[in-house]
Image (tube, rainbow, N blue to C red):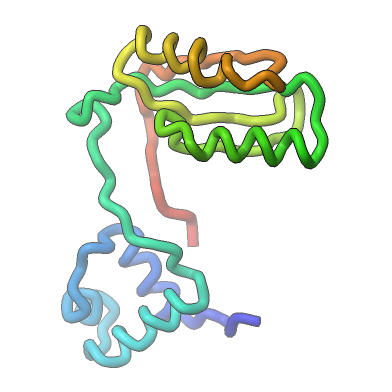
Length: 154
């Protein structure tokens, strides 16, 4: 079982969520410690799985992926085998940036990035459409992103 986080651990995590590119010295200055204990704490937080990975967040518009769509998928029927096969397929589709198994009217919620409507249509027809267990799809097109926070509230 992971140990309880203290105030310094939480401050380190909050600071890294805002800017994971900080050097150990910069992080130490931000949390009012010396670099060595901050380095050790950060490594422990990584080992314990509190920090899963570090990523660069790219601008979708500049990368030619400005269309954001939430795609709700209902399977024709569902069991472990069908769900596992569906998720294995989804993991191989680069346009799908996030996938959630959900309750309610739909089985999965996909976050999809595409260059434009034509590319999204190709995604629907040639990728999701090729999965024979898909029963229905509902697409919601994002007109503007109001809030996007990659961190969690701690």
